[in-house]
Length: 342
Ligand SMILES: Cc1ncc(C[n+]2csc(CCOP(=O)(O)OP(=O)(O)O)c2C)c(N)n1
Ligand code: SF4
Image (tube, rainbow, N blue to C red):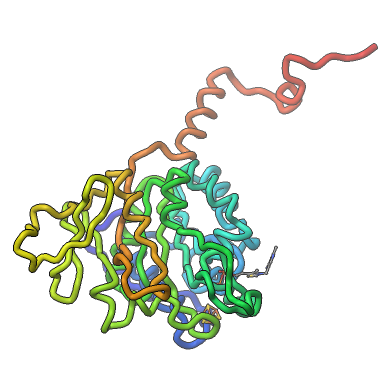
C-alpha cells in the first residue's frame, strides 16, 4: 500500500452495480469517499475485500469494484476476522450499520475490537434500522418515537466511541456523512493504521430518521455544536473560534476566549495517544435534543495506539508450532490424554 502519486480515481473502484439506496441517503456520500480514499491509497482492486453484514449500509460491497462479501446480519466482523487470519496480506474493510454492529453483532463487536485484527471498520450509524423500515436501534435517542417505540424510547443509547475505547480499540474516530474531504482523510489514516480502525459515521437516513444529526450538520448551528479535534492542536470551536475547552483536573470546562482572564495557552491540547483524555472526550455525548446547552460533539481521531494485531500473533504461533515438524489431525485430536478401554 503506497500513497505516492497515483493516476487512480474513484471511478477505478466503481462497480457495474447501481446503488439501490434512497435519494439523499448518507450512504451515497460514504461510498464516494471510500472509493476516493482507496484510489488515493493506490490500492489494487484484486487485493481489497469489503465485508458487510445485513442492512442498507451493508449493501456497500456491491458498489465497490473489489472483492466483497455480503454476509450474515451481525456477523461482518467474524467473517472479516477469519478472512484476515487466513489471508493477512489482503486489505480488508468492513461496512456495517448501528444495528448490524451494535445490536445483533454487539458481542462480536467487543471481541473483535479487543483482538485488534487489521481491519478498517466503517460503522454507518443512522440511529435506526433502515432496511427493515424504522425500528429503533441501540444508538437511537431516549424519547425517540419509532414503530417499535411508539411512546418514546426508554433504552439508554450506546456511545460507540466510549464502547470502542472500553473494549480496547486502537484507532477510534468519528465523522459525519457531510464532511466529505475530512472523511476521506480519516479513511486513509484508518487504512494505514495496523490494527482495527473504527470509524463511526453519522449517516442521515432521510426516510426513517431524517435530521438525526442536524444539530451537528446544520450550517447555522454546526460551529457551536461540534469540536474538530486534531493532534497537537488546542480544542477550539465556535463561529468565531472564540470558545475552547480547558481541563480543570479531570473535568472539561468550556471557556470563552474573549474573556481577558482566559489564554489560549491554557486550553487542552489534543493528543491522539492519550487514552485517559480520549475517554473524557468520548463522554461529550449529551443529547442535543434534550437542551440547548450541551458540550460540543467531537469529530476526528480520538485515539490511536500501536499494538500487535491478531493475525500477526496467530501467524507467529503457527510458525512456532511448525518448528516441531508436521503433525497429523488424528494425533492432534488424540492428544496425550486419550486411552482405549479394553
Ligand atoms: C438474523 C437476522 N435477524 C434480523 C434480520 C432483519 N434485519 C435486517 S437488517 C436489520 C437492521 C439493519 O439496521 P442497521 O444495521 O442499522 O443498518 P441500516 O439498514 O440502518 O443501514 C435487521 C433487524 C436479519 N436479516 N437477520
Ligand atoms: S432507508 Fe434510510 S438508510 Fe436505507 S437506503 Fe433509504 S435513506 Fe438510506
